[in-house]
Length: 51
Image 1: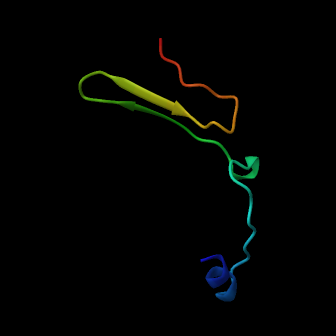
Image 2 (image 1 turned 60 degrees about the vertical axis):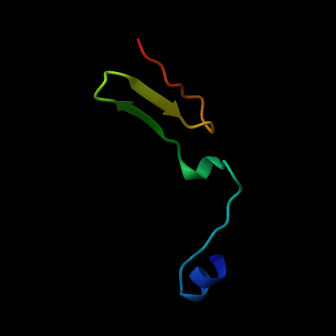
């Protein structure tokens, strides 16, 4: 896949797993039952917390 993208003219840079350059994510989901689920990206020092 990487070679195909490069051959198609795309600039490709391969980075390692959990590389900080890819950014960080977090999410909250509120279900119709009232339950809230949360997650944070393990590459950062963020946390999912409810109160």
